[in-house]
Image (cartoon, rainbow, N blue to C red; front, side):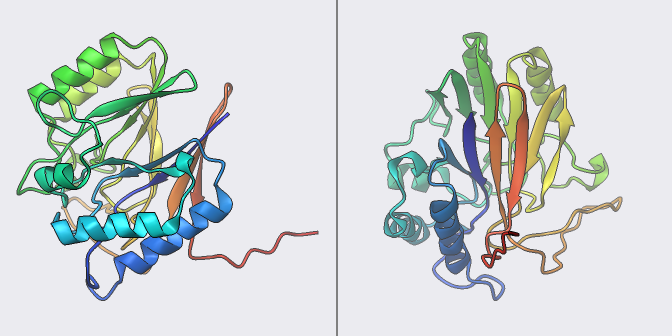
Length: 263
């Protein structure tokens, strides 16, 4: 069995954002993960590490991670989102791999499984972009892969309700769909964030899931127009359990720590 902790969109910043302290919530999430899932095999944070992509916020993120004193197996695997700055990220995290074109793309092989982390950031837009160079890199990696594979990305690769209301999702949906369809025998699940909502389903024969933001959860938009809305829903992160016979996604409402186990 493999256990993957999937957290997204902490939006770390040196001050409150819209009256909410992202650092305090992120610290509570890390404490919950450490206390309840120290046996996890992977801890992935799928982008929007910071709110403004600035050096001070990245350094604050590093400080918070260090102070959390997570075990080595919970050293987070990171990718960037639309609120991040690729060049500043690379300066602050020089040990994280990049592809030959400088995008934050890499893979990890763990327990006969391949975890691929991709970069859907484009500067000065909240929309997701996956250019030809990045697609070529992913196609090349997948062409050499013959084991169960899991994709980690920031932007949603499909509209989560209607196409006309998906204003900030991945823009190269058709091209990405072709990659998924071609490789749906080996790609077993897609992990993403970005929309700050809990979602799950199947796309191109591949299951997917997303957690809410640890900073500011939003609610699904079922209208015909792009809009964002909040309703004081609980922040969370997801826990993926991968067994030989099943893949299960659990949602952890980490702010609720008063648990009563029935005798």
